[in-house]
Length: 576
Ligand code: ATP
Image 1 (cartoon, rainbow, N blue to C red):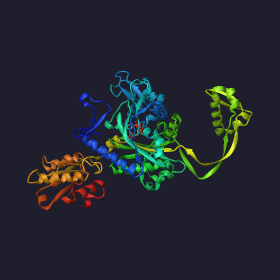
Image 2 (cartoon, rainbow, N blue to C red; image 1 turned 135 degrees about the vertical axis):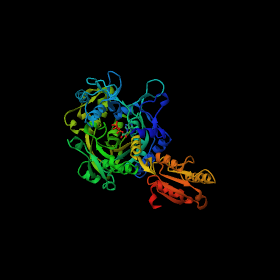
Image 3 (cartoon, rainbow, N blue to C red; image 1 turned 180 degrees about the horizontal axis):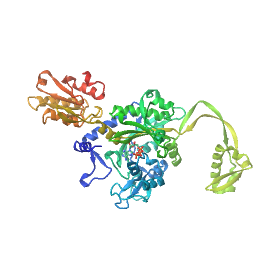
Image 4 (cartoon, helix red, strand yellow; image 1 turned 60 degrees about the horizontal axis):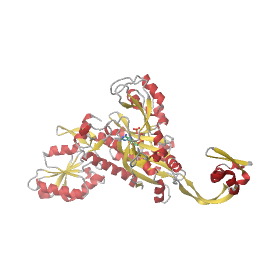
């Protein structure tokens, strides 16, 4: 992001580093009044597209979660980045980023640790802080989760969630009840996530506390299909793994439908959400000339994902990941099902009951009890599990089961093994999950950067944030030409009426009108209303549009409806 934009973000209250009075803490940002309003509008717009229009529901789960959650999810073991420390100044760096920043290699994150070490030596890479040679320095895995303790003492470790998703997965047993055990259903969450990033950078792009908007769509992989027809004609820019690996690989333009047909995108569900995502990005003002979907390379995929496409936007020559779109399969629900005592499956009813053969055992406990003592009950359970899994184990004279790493042989005649025909109404399945995971801060950064423009108006350079009306922190600035002869009162009344209509309004009566317009242009206010002397006679005002600087005369009584429609996009300024 250019220096002017960073300065604008600070000066006009969009975002700035936190706790600057105490020197600032790297990776933590504050959204000022304009930024917080922009962020809230962005989140609401996301809710509208990904939740309301798709018929999903939102939950709010805690940000601190106990350790077993992350043992099960794999984050404790696998949520690592590559750390290298400078031997001279002690500064920590992400080893893969040092390679990406200084060589032509694009996705060093996908490479194994030893290769990273070798590349640092081969390219003679140096500490970005003090220019000391890094060759030979150890490259280590660093877990990104912030650890804490729950309650006094250290008996209950907890972690700040590194993604909002786990708060949804862990509650699946209750959520499926809420959904009356019917797939598919989607649960969303907008909330804070925390990652102890090795080196936060690029303002709000890589921070240690950020906001995610995630949708977990639970599906039956065999029965459920997305409404692909709704997005199949959308043209997208794709950067597939094959293209990334090819010598002269580049972007490919095709429709979502073609990408699915040609097997470029393997999951219909992921394809569907790429279409939904693109529609939303366009709606919120991301420049489609600087937007693409990039497929993850095999080594780069998160521990849970079977296919993943990131939405990426270009800002100042860098491609930034703004969304991860993953097919998480049944990974998370299976893990939580195994690690906890709860049931993470749903019952899939057959169209018609099926008659199936089922192997069962009915062990002779009067034999097992005296023979095996305390483990007799465990042996009986193990025999049942084995019968279900492998009938052939019961074909000889003896069958062997293992309890606590000790083998026990049981005569088959004592197991009561048999195969019976039963009628089953359905089966238990573990749902699969499709996940669009949006980083709100990075989207805000992109929207902010793509909206920034300068142009010449009345021989003067003006700075303009061409934010979509739906997102703009303020929808309308209301100005009296001067605060005298009743113009101030009229303007304040108009501001009150517009606020009552639910619009964000700024009232401003200081400085000349041109200056007031510039102030609003700079923070992205799409419309301004000016009350002049004529207004006192004709009950009409001048309504000005930011981007075209066109002005029209509008009756005061019509203003609330007109502005509400302009904000929602139901009416265009050109048609007034
Ligand atoms: P990266 O490779 O950039 O570290 P990631 O692939 O680990 O990101 P995901 O786990 O897919 O990211 O998270 C989903 C989204 O959350 C990302 O697309 C991004 O927009 C956002 N996000 C992730 N980490 C951060 C961060 N440190 N600061 C701000 N946003 C983030």
